[in-house]
Amino acid sequence: EVQLVESGGGLVKPGGSLRLSCAASGFTFSRYTMHWVRQAPGREPEWISSIRSGSSYIYYADSVKGRFTISRDNAKNSLFLQMHSLRAEDTALYYCARDRTTLIGDNDFSGHVFDFWGQGTRVVVSS
Amino acid sequence: IVMTQSPATLSVSPGESATLSCRASQSVSSNLAWYQQRPGQAPRLLIFGASIRATGVPLRFGGSGSGTEFTLTISSLQSEDFAVYYCQQYNNWPPYTFGQGTKLEIK
Image 1 (cartoon, rainbow over the protein chains, first blue to last red):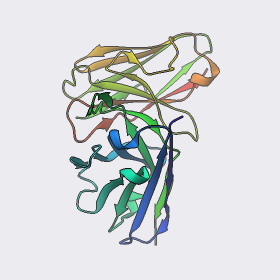
Image 2 (image 1 turned 90 degrees about the vertical axis):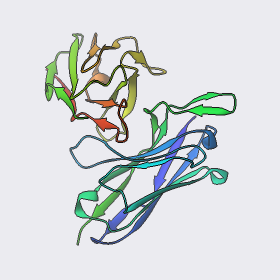
Image 3 (image 1 turned 45 degrees about the horizontal axis):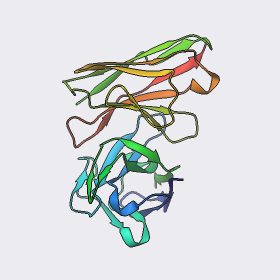
């Protein structure tokens, strides 16, 4: 069974930092593109970052570029999001999501949709 | 690409059908997904490629459309289907963009 468990959220002051983690199990983590998606209260989900299986390609939304850093440790089946210079508008539930990656032999092809999601970790940026 | 969903809220009786719409500000070909989000839960992938049901999704969920106009149809509504539905484009990325959602409520 695919499981994604986020942690590391909390209350932080504007300008502060947090590091989110996502522990993955039930699939070969190292072969999948992974994403972070956040959702502010009452709003639609917002994609914020993606990382390919071998960390060769990394993408960010403009809203977080230069402030957030995505990374992964395939040996530990873990995904991370380092967040700096946090703002009130970063307040949201942060989800780790697996990409619907197609595996063919030694190759992986991103599907660009999010087929499994964790339950999220809440980040509140407030003074 | 801006995704616009309509209506914002749809009231339908159990057992009836519901039709939800999603419009893209420019063509996204068939690179369109639908998600269901129940209260207090993470979104769940229902449809990708505009019309392909994800694993385990009941046959009563159907997607159609291409280009800029898309539809999610849910037939014979069950109690567990009343939720918020989002569309997401993945034709022009980054970023991947979501619509603002349609809340499907019990009439």
